[in-house]
Image 1 (cartoon, rainbow, N blue to C red):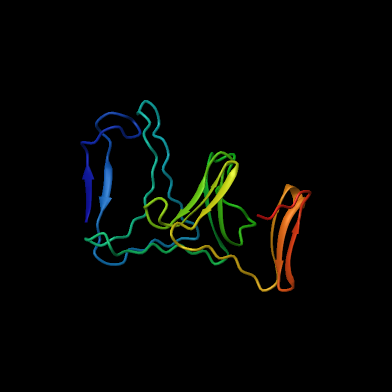
Image 2: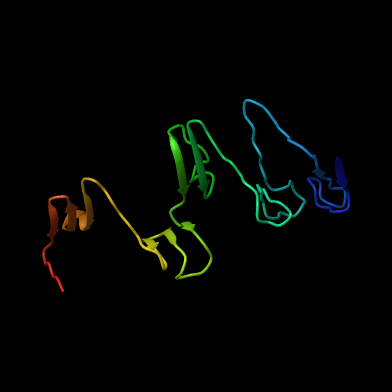
Length: 172
């Protein structure tokens, strides 16, 4: 089923003759091609610019069930930032990459209650790992090293023991 709405206005020529297109299909809907792109870009003048948005949403009527699967046989790259500064793609992507501009943040959060749920945030000038009411475990079979100032001060944990190095070492 396809429907057109001619009353929204603002299309590429501006004015009330904009045509939006909505399509509903009960069943699987597949587009197959060597390359597929979805692009949201500003309309041509004189139409007023608006927010550019692409949404991928999978949900049932209750809002409790739905899955979005994203897979690339070689890699998946998520990027944010100005197109010239942060490239959308990279030939070196091998696995999963999350790439943002220098002034942007990367946040991974489980739950919505601050101080209770877990959160990892990379922001300009800091990285914060917050275990909330849970625990944080860093483990290795060989070695864990925490260091600052290029290794001038460090704590190294190995199966043989713990080494603390620094110009001033203080244990309380």
